[in-house]
Image (cartoon, rainbow, N blue to C red; front, side, top):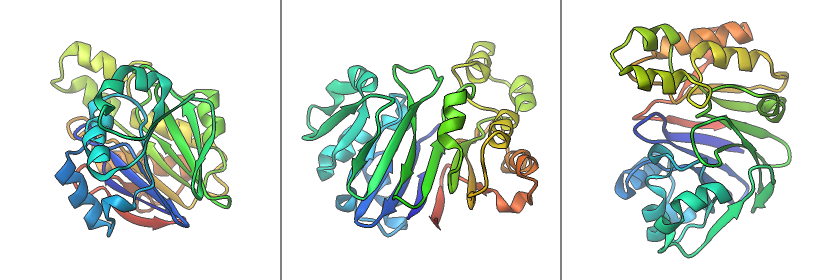
Length: 254
């Protein structure tokens, strides 16, 4: 089982997970040509994708999905709540499947466990994906952690974890006050220290990879995100990976 990122941040998100003969793309906030180019960077042909999973309806996560799925005949899976919001965009997509935010399902060789998160969307979820031996936890776009989030992510072999902003940088920055409130609120995004506290609460005994994701380009730095997560794990900051907005990150084996 392995995973890689097409890019992560407010300008677009996409994460690939594969095992056996199955390959999933979680979210796609990039245009059709851009997505194809980012996949090619990882050695992936669009037609080889088994499905696209959508976390929620915000443009940086779902914006590129309808056109890309229709162009390449890729099935799309999203919660019933998200489908209710964006369903009309998928009129040209042949296979669109809804699921409940608490119900596990399988796509080929991969098992998917969605779990709900507090975020300002209709029915937002994040995912744990496994192949029967290993599990990858993906967590971006939530304002606060919950016991269910922590239970879902405990015992994973790899984590992609939101470190959206540094609280002081956001407070002192030039964003409008209402936007600052939204980002820092209970339905917004995790700051570095909140992400670190979440990480410290998990069973990390199997953990082989941690990647900080969805970093704000204005209100965070890779160095601050790495330092916060490294403190939680008592490890070197160099061990913490970063999902870059432009480059994402390359293949990581679990």
